[in-house]
Amino acid sequence: MAKESGLGWTTLNVDDSAGSARDIRNDVTNLDWSMPRGVQDVTGIDKSAIERLLLLADFSGTMNGVFDDGSNLAHSVLKTVSSTSVNRTIGIVISGQTLNNECLITDYALTRAASGEFTWSAPFSLADGNVPTWS
Image (cartoon, rainbow, N blue to C red; front, side):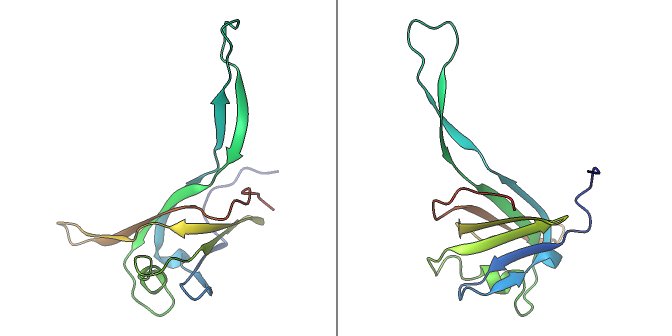
């Protein structure tokens, strides 16, 4: 196994409101996600250190990008976030590793900076209770 950079990203598909996967890599400037597990503190008073149980898995993150209102690109995919209540598959593929999750995109925030930049941000969270798993 060789160490790799995040350059040469293979796929970043996000479903539009009709459920069609759209590759929006060209419009995304950065992306972060995490797959945390909950923990429950079950420490008894007889312990000298914390005792925990591992709980449910989760998946969440944020996509950030540059405004692009071309057909089937970022704005076209995300503009319906506020008017539709649909799960959207977010498909991440890099270096042959695939991570697909059904998510709720909870916002599509647009920013026009003083310098003239027109950017967006879209946070997402796991929607369907399936454990995030790389394949």
